[in-house]
Image (spheres, rainbow, N blue to C red):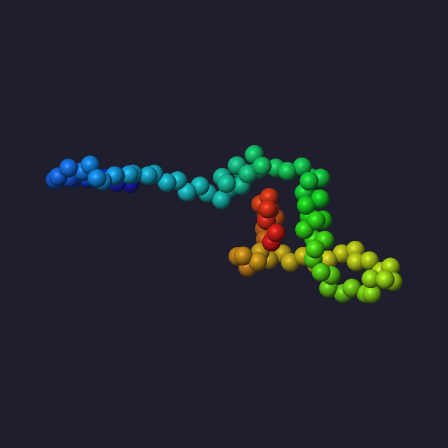
Length: 98
């Protein structure tokens, strides 16, 4: 639709400031497309980051560390801890730890 703003001043408006800001809310799809175009990281970098982040995760069922038993797998939840929804597109920011 069409919106109209009318500002009327009866005295000096020197001490006032009027601002009109047009805001665009992009769709999720357009944000994702922009990220895919600009910010892809090399696979090697991502793998290194994942290993670093998950190396600090305490193992659930560790046997005595002195007997040579090594944990080769960990369970990773598919739920986002912020939205509590299932992750459909796995992605994270550069400094994101969740």
